[in-house]
Image 1: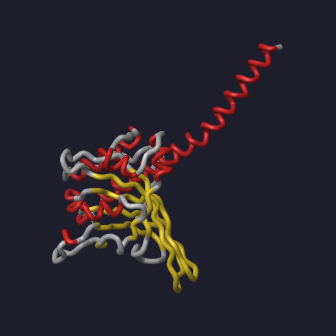
Image 2: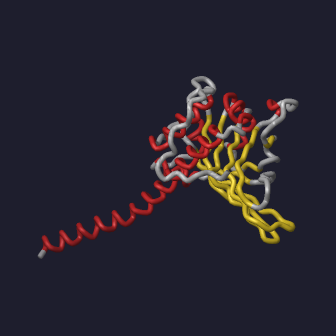
Image 3: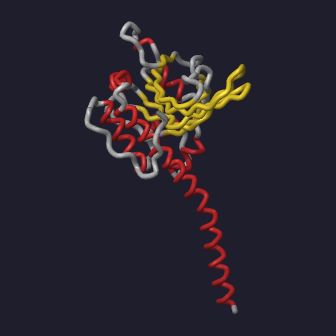
Length: 243
């Protein structure tokens, strides 16, 4: 009887452990899917013949912020929301960091009806822009200057902290991002890297890693070096970005 009880207890404990580990594994897979979608989004921008402006400026970017899917909806009043990742280039080695997770959202008022899905990609061009993204909360158009691409040849792009481009699909006919709040998601960093990790840990100290993000880092490094080879195939499970 003692052995039977011991075995039953062991089975119950293993079941409890498996049950408690399942949500963490599911959360990590969901975050990996987001990273894969960010890779697909980057590849879509690179291969788009209308995005020469983006390809020309990423070579000088200090960081890249990618939101694979930003959904904006309105019926009388509206709002937008999405999740994204930030990667930064080491100024000395040129090596790109692993991704840190962020949320992006806003609330708007006024007469507006429709739904829009956008893929958003921001190029962080200055130290001020990077510092703003590393802060607790960053409000677009307030905490850093931003230009929405394409920027004409008569505009001095070095005067802007962040350059933004989007690929839109929907009824609004254009993405409005002024006033949007971008906030770091340290809880997602912890789930993805399996340990406590702030945005500074990921972007500045670089003391965490996950090989699941290597495809994204490699893709950004290739594009930032001006390599014009076709982008690799989208990772399994990656969704097609908005067009």
